[in-house]
Image (cartoon, rainbow, N blue to C red; front, side):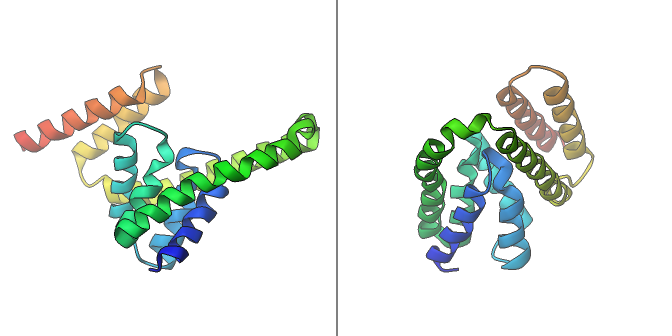
Length: 172
């Protein structure tokens, strides 16, 4: 895939999402389902790589770009990731006094809810690909319960899951 076209696809996903994994549904639809230049496994790996390093969750977009088009794709991903930051400044200036408007708040709330629904729709196919047995299923359930029911930092859940997965591989 052409790096410029990839940039436009990644930019569409990052501009229309609020943060982190909110761009995941659009990227899955465009790159896995429509263009078939990426697999669910690669998308899962890209998300995991983005979560392992420091920084924002949305950094996985750079890994997605790399999986699709190598180093030029990674550069396209990085550029698509930073472009919205440059676009938001004039938009915030324009919306500044209008943010208290009831209609504007309603639109923001509706977009947030739509983004949450899209995220769930993209997560299910990725979970089917990643959960390939009882150990991954157990790790997913325990991780979900820990994150949903406690104030435990996600870093510890990730590290614990990685250790448990490694231990399961060594024992099994």
